[in-house]
Amino acid sequence: MSHPPRMVLSAPVLDAPDPHALAAFYRRLLGWTVVQDEPHWVKLRPPNGGTGLSFQAEPLYKAPTWPATADDSQQMMAHLDIEVDDLDAAGEHAEAAGAVLADFQADEDVRVYLDPAGHPFCLFLPEPEEPLHPGDGP
Image (cartoon, rainbow, N blue to C red; front, top):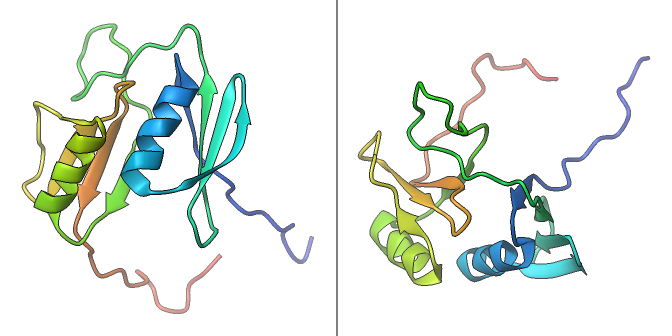
């Protein structure tokens, strides 16, 4: 195959006992629009398009443990990184939307919050991103 087939990441999917409640939280947090609303599935998209965020019902959902533990607790397998311009203002907004500041904070330049279903997400300030090897690409 000379060219890979077109592939576009549509949306990460977060499991939740109530996908509508979790989608409502992220709608408040991000200001995004609901573009799909079904009994067990909700999808949000940013106003200008791009990768969205989806939520699906999982009746056996167990909130992940943050930070990781050595016991049989559900471990975090993924989290969302959200770039912000002001950590304090973004943190206040996140808490007003329903997030909880995590007890454990690993880095002073990043704030870890838990959404209403217990998924960790990070707020962080912009960082320069340069290719590790100029000219390298997929």
